[in-house]
Length: 255
Length: 288
Image 1 (cartoon, rainbow over the protein chains, first blue to last red):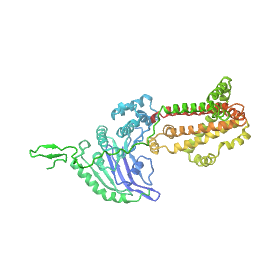
Image 2: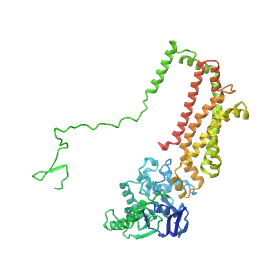
Image 3: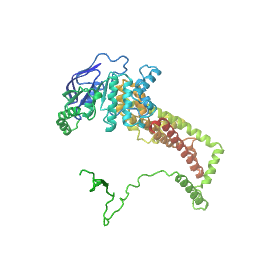
Image 4: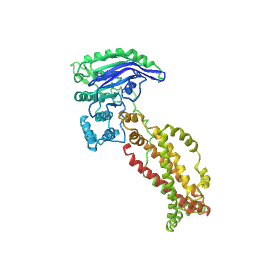
């Protein structure tokens, strides 16, 4: 299933947040959206998953979601959004309850995603006992449990320290290699964008417009942290954003 | 010559470590003083029983040696005798049964109603707009001031006493409950919506468990208010009840009985707060 954004404009009262955004998130690819802070990239993601309604324009699901998908558009949040009073498996079970699945079906799905994210040993543990990286792995497992068509990832690694971030990036790459999931990945970290994105979309400062779309052909598994080619793309992206970021930094925060 | 500072190049080209403290003899040295002490009081387990025992000993001795008049403050041993009489005559049971019945009915009904109204205020705009100003207006009234009114409405018997306690525990529960719901992490609710959870499921599985610590906290406040109101209500037209017992003892200048009654009240309060702690430990185990 593709996700298509057509002429999307979004406004909060008098404040233009996004202007005339047209973009396709093709099936099986990771599209990274980068932009200076406050450029409306998180708003764009909320619009994509139907947590907010666009002022103008439309967002279309093109094609059928995979058979048996319980929640085609599934988020992974920056702050993990795990319920502290539920264990790891309880948190995954939360999103499976209410779908008329049998107890054994729910249990089966939980142990399946825990195995896929190598969390099986942590099924009975409470979130507070886990490090940030493990919490985000649980959130990823929870997202996979509902067989999503598109993963909507809102700065999923921003709350983690840089070592954990590297580890999780590797995890995401190997996960993609195995499952070829579709994702829209919001980040302000250009390194994450060039490591994980098949396509990197650069937004301008508020009101966010698409400034540039960069396709990266190197397969995800061959991208390493010190690749010169990726380094050049990252520098190029930064040059595009630098002015915007500088101006955005000086913009007053009246939103 | 790019060797790090900690080594020196010798003529042979072998790096030798330099001593860690190449301090000249005539330079004054001193240890960095520690300044981070204090401001972290700890509970010393052996102090509370000692304080209690010391207080009792001083009190008993003062009474025995005539420093404290028995009319003003009877000796602990006399209070104990009064308490034993209370138990042996079976009156403690009568008083406690009457008090507990009022307390439990008033507190349980007030808590349940308060939680329900609090949830409504926390979730629905109409209920919020309708009830919140009412609650704000009525909450600050000392409920004892309403007792005479309740006596006119519900009679001098059980009705007015239970109603006072119910009213007294209702408002703190309302405020604690909707405060707890207002404070629910919106990102958790957004998560629930993003996974297509039904509204009912979001309320049951996300909102209410999130608000539970605040609700239990409200229960603690409601319970202590209930005990205050219980005693106040029992001081008007009650035959049995700890409040009635204390009032009667005061009227008879029987300070030994009076203090025995007060100790029963203290125990009652401690037991109630212990029960709530048990509930907290059970329901909030995930918090550690």
